[in-house]
Image 1 (spheres, rainbow, N blue to C red):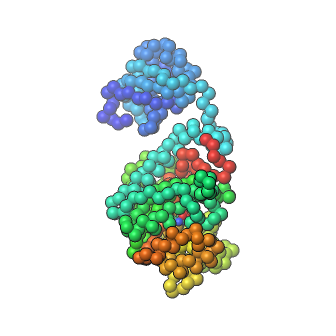
Image 2: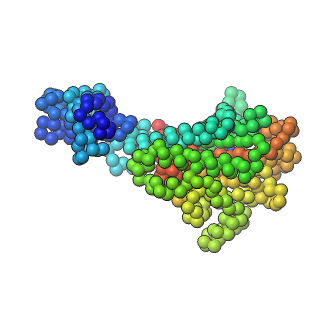
Image 3: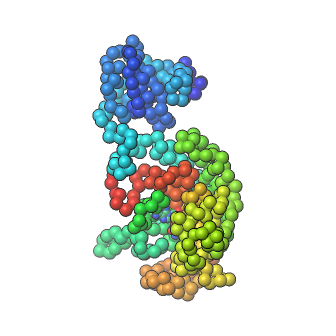
Length: 423
Ligand SMILES: NC(=O)C[C@H]([NH3+])C(=O)NS(=O)(=O)OC[C@H]1O[C@@H](n2cnc3c(N)ncnc32)[C@H](O)[C@@H]1O
Ligand SMILES: [Mg+2]
């Protein structure tokens, strides 16, 4: 609502968020997709019956009303509607979420909890993140493609595959569209996809889901640095878009806008894995060269930076078979992770890909995979192989950071993780 509507007749349809009856008036706070507005239902104007009904009506009953909009500093948003009439559309009895319930109870009632203010505003931010992500690729001449979700082999390690019955065979839910995007660059050159990726994560952490939305890109002729530039432009574009379109949501969620503004200017800093290990050891973290960087180590590293930063050139043993080895030091893989500051850690994983047939075959065997499962993928290196790179951005991890959430489950309407499949 705004001043231009003051004194005019307005109508609202929504759900009862709060209500009280004082004297012959009901003060009803009606929630709709835009927010909450107070409606005053006076028995002198609307009749005694509706005021009596509203006295005990259940929260979340659906209603509709019309009346005059007036200024009211004590009401949410500074306005209220003085109803000419007020109608209950759908009754609600004993809405099970009253406040103070435990997380498992709330997750069991996720289909109702998603009506909450925090989740509603977060979903609006996620809408902008998805729109800005699509916009970036479309405006920069990338082709959107539709890779399969039912696949025959692992991309990111066999330990987190979800097997599914596929007629008389076993298939796996996709961990990443990457290998299929790599097949598409020999015709479309620059491709992107937004799909769900699945990871049978054994442990429950605040930044892992079993099903998440994965924005992935792959381009022919791009080396690692070229692709890192795409990744930082993408993230900066998304943050800028959210700052422009979701200021209100960010304020409702209590997010510091000044800090976010610091993230919209690439290039982002780049450090090599070696430097990351040095920083961690200097800070007293018990870590050796060759160890993987987990959430704790990433959290420590993020405190050294006031914007997202890349870590590159990882030991090949801790990175996937498809990553190209550094020609200057074949102990290292040309992989990059983009870490979000403020303790959030990895939001993007990417790399330059091995484009030599024999080297890729050796890496597949070295990492214990069956080359037969990757025959088609190896074929790509037989027929006009080209240098190429790509990355995957975890949408919920990005939303978690931009919105300042403390758990990834609040970045998706129906979170899936070990022990949670209902509702
Ligand atoms: N096309 C590519 O090059 C992508 C590449 N094959 C890939 O899947 N890399 S990744 O495993 O680091 O996952 C990429 C990102 O996907 C996110 N990710 C990865 N795993 C998860 C889980 N379990 N939950 C939520 N988000 C997750 C996280 O932001 C990672 O940086
Ligand atoms: Mg990763």
